[in-house]
Structure formats: C-alpha cells, structure tokens
Length: 295
Length: 323
Image 1 (cartoon, each protein chain N blue to C red):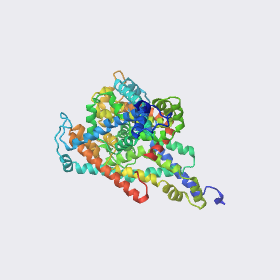
Image 2 (image 1 turned 45 degrees about the vertical axis):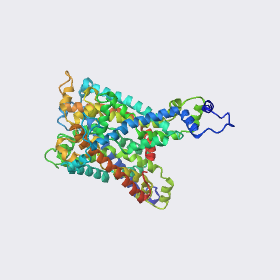
Image 3 (image 1 turned 60 degrees about the vertical axis):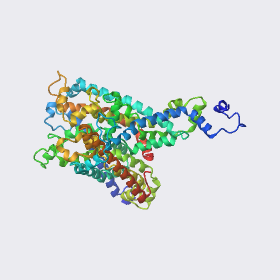
C-alpha cells in the first residue's frame, strides 16, 4: 500500500537529509558574516571580553560613528567608490568596443588580432616587468593606476564577442541603411541590446575594483590615494592596529577599540556588494555560462 | 586615371573590368576604417600592457638594476635560475606551493561537483534558488575582509578557541595564525568556504542542460536517486569536469596570492612561503628584480607545460579538451 505513494520512505529520508545538509551549508556561509555584524554593533571595550555570538551584549553605534568621523577611512572609501565607478564604466565601454570590432567576421586582420589576444590569456610578463612598465608610464602614485591597466581584459572580450555574434545581422544592417557609422551602431544598436552581458561584466569588474587591494599595496607610497581595501589590508595583515587607533578622531567615546572599529569598517566595506549582487544574479549566471562554453 | 572611379562604389558600372584584388582590399579597409580604429585601440592596449611586460621578462637573463635600462643591462644567462635552484628557500617554497595546491585539488575540486549534484536533487525550486544565492555570497567578499573575519575568529578570545575550550578539547587558547602547522588547513578551509557555491555554478549550468527524458526513463526502469546521479548526471557533465580539471592542474603552481598575502606573517612563514609570495618578497621588498623575474618565469613555463600535458591526457581519456 505504501508503495503507491510517489515518495518512498527512502526518498523522503534522502530529501530530509539533503535539505538539512543544505541548511547547514547556508548557516556556515552566513554565520561568520553575522558574527562580524553583531560584534561591530557591540561596545568595543566590552567586546574585547569575547563571547558575543548571536546578539550584541552592550549595543552601541559608536564604532560606526567613529568610522564616519575618521577622515582617513572616509577618504579611502571615496577613492574606492571613485575607482569602482570610473574603472567599471571605462572597462565595459572599452572592452565592449574592441569586442564589437573583433566580433565582425569581415574585419581585416581579425584572426591575427584574436591570436594576439589569445596569447595574453596563457602567458604574461609577471610582477616585476609589469611594475617596471607602470613606473615608466608614471602611473606610480597616480590615481590612473586603478583605471588604465584595468581598462581591458581579453577574457571579458570573449564573453562580449560571443554575445555580439548572436545579435541578428538585420539590426545592424537597418542602422547602416539609415546612414549610421560603426561608432553609432556600436553605441546605439549593439550596446543597448546587450544589456545582460554588459551587466555581467560590469558586476564582475565592479567587484574586482571594489575588492582589489594589491594594486594599492604595490604601486602606492602616497597613502592619500589608497582605497579602503588597501587600508584594511594594512590593518589586518600587518596588524598595525595602532594605525586604526590613530584613525579614531578625538571626542569619540573611549569605548571604541581598534578591533571594534576594524569590524565596523569591514561591514561598511562589504554592505554595498551584499546589496547589489542578488539583483544582478540572473545576469551573471547567464554570463558565466557564456564564458564557460567559449572559455 | 582610374583612381577616382574605383574609389567610388562601382556597382553602377558593371561593364568595367573587375578591380584588382588589392584595390578591393583597400576599399574594404576604407569602408571599415572606424572598425579598424576600434580594433587597433585594443591591440595597442595589449601591446603596451601585455607584450611590453613580456619583453621585460628578458631581465631574468640579465643583471638588471633600477638605474639601468632593460636593454643596457648585462646578460648573465641562466645564473638567476641556477641561484633559485640552489636557494635555501627553494625546497620549502616548492613544498608549500605544491602541498597547498594538491590538497586543494583533491578536496577543493570535487566538493563543488558534489554540491551541485545534491543541490540539483532539491525538490523545491524556491529553496534551491535561495541556497544558491546564499552560497554565492562569499565569492564577492575580498580576501582582506575574509582575512579580517579569520583573524577575529582565530584570535585568543575568538569563537574557535571559545568552542574548543568549552568542549574541553584544549586547555589554553591557541594562536592559530602564529603556528605554521595550522596554516595549510586555514588556507584550504577558507578557500572552500569562499568558493564552494561559486564554483558550482558551471556544473549547475551543465546539469540544467541534461534532458529530463533521461531521468524519466531511468525512473521507469526503477533507478534510485543515487543511481540517477551516478549513471545520468555525472556522465552528462563529464566534459565540463574535464575542462575545469585541465585548468586546475595547470594552475598547481598558482597559489592564491591575494589570500596568502593577507594571512601570512613572519611566524607562519615556513608554511606560507609559496612561489608567488617569494616572487613578491624578493622582487618588491628586497629589490632583486632579475632574480624575482627568473622565479616568475620558471613558474609560468612549468604552468604552460602542465596545461599542455593535462590537455593531452584528458583528450586521450575522454575526447574533451580545452583546445
């Protein structure tokens, strides 16, 4: 009689275990982030005793007040926002533009251009030769170090190119008959119909720009140009917590510690990403598939 | 005399002799001049930012210092490579690099496949979507943030010590990041935590293209869940697995530089010094440009050979390859 049910006992047991396993994975994924959030909302001095797991023991916004009032942190945040916005805009426009030209099968020299690009995916100059180039280009201690060397990626070009080649030729032909040149076709026809891939690449590159700390470590001596991730790197890796204490402006309550202000800075740095990515998820899953099929 | 005529579109004069091949070519080039500008801007960028550094690799065979130009530095042949093989750190660096990578390959490579397989078995579409969204999240955090989380967790008053002491497994708090023996474990576990969900995307995409008819047929034949996973799902994504395996093998000398740079310190150096870190240390911190470049080149060449080898092996085994 039981066999008439669609789900057998074994099946139901499997589903139960599987669901529980997935819930455990979700918990393990989210809890470390939650731990940082509740600790950042706890009074710093009290937090040093540890033992705050689920909810702040002594609730306090002072760590966040200290972050907002710290000129060093705010400047670094500003650099990060500026490099992410400008860097992503230029990366998407420039890479898509080159990809549009490369995607045209009648392009003279197209095969050679693509070969030139493919080689760059398998071989590169490495750390020191790249550093020497940046030095010769006067990009050290220059804001443009974040923008120009990151303006193009051949891997992203392939994703764009794959997408562009699937656009029906009719669209471009119609624009051509209306007298549009290739620039106008790229900007007014090709880009607008390619929003899914544009969103994907913009998300990937935006996250790269937002998260990258190494560029700031290697190419900068001028601390006024460092992004927030480089700032945090110096705090986390070199455990120069003194720097953080120095960043705490006067007049802030003495309960703020270098550890608690660090946690608050981490939360502030992470929140924008956490809020943006779920909305772009349906795009990037598609983009990953294009990339994986061709890449 | 013919110039002005053939420069114009000649469709109106079919009786004319066909223009020569080179004329045709020039005309085509002229018509796509805007496209050529776009393409050449990209090529120019690649020449400057990819190919000039490749040329710069020759300092690996020279005695370069910062006041000389690359071209004028004297040649020294394979001196720097020899010096690296005889370097006191060579064995340690190779052991750390290969050790971490191989464990990552053995544990970290199959886990996303398993995760994708079990995720695919969830009945509720909404729950599946929610798990996916949550599991992608850590991928978008930077290693600096994760380093901050880890140092907080592993601190003397951190949650790991709290738990272990509450369970009476340890009596005194342990400073995990100060002891080399814990370093590999920390690196591997945190890498899996960060990338498990993200790495599963490609497999999920591959699984979603498996025809539902196959599952139905198998159900009628009385196949259970694990049998369907083993006989239908896994073989269907074999090609995807092979290609990602080729890439993983060719990357064994690639440590996760961003990750290790955040978590290393002088106390755990004997376990955290990998090739990429050593390149950074000798080059940027000690200023031994030529030596550092030689180590980097050694790494790139091995990686390229491994890529070709792995590609050939998987091609032989199951007819899929990267190129």
